[in-house]
Length: 331
Image (tube, rainbow, N blue to C red):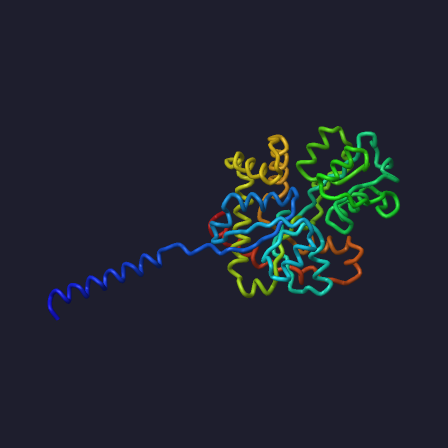
């Protein structure tokens, strides 16, 4: 082999090695997944996580789809039309109890109730709520459970002393109560601020109680975990990082921007009500617990008699993994 040939061979060899090295150094493409979410105060944690780029840091690109009804979201998940869903009520547990055993809860942006029961200003005392209408989004929804729980906490029988009325989402319920078509409803931030400004009577603030309950639970399927464990883990990592972003005072202006998009609101006062309330209410990881699922079950007429075991609806391995990772980093 001539010197020129040997030189060319070596040149091609080093170019090939360099090319392979450059290719391997290229970042992996983001894993795209479809995730559903409802509109609600606690779900703003998910929205801010999504908008802040927290999921992209862990290799995910989310197609965030708003699905108003939990039942529709769960059906889409079981049909593999979406992979992960933020579920705002007991519908997931009910579907699981009816046989959809592939469903599993892995996290929740809140592990305690985030509602207040408020009434029109003329109703001052608990006993004055008797015979009155309390608006919820839909019968059997999370707000229905919460309204009934609040009534019981006040010493009222929700089946006899008050009328629980399906009145639609929070915006619709607010229009109904301010328009005289309801006497009471349950509200989350920022409607808690609006209720105070309207002079409404706050009968009970459930966020002050040590009552565990899954708020905006993160659901997926065991089959998706089996096929794509790392994607589910990265989702929980991204959600945890996004919740940190939400609570960090240094990010306040960005959080206002993202919340404004989420609520379609420019009211800084209302956006701060939401940011402050949830930053205080959920100070750590996106926790969900067996106790919160137990409380959901025992307070639900359909689920209570079935002898369900909360732990069987949960996979806490992702939260455990994220907790250990953070501990190793001194967080």
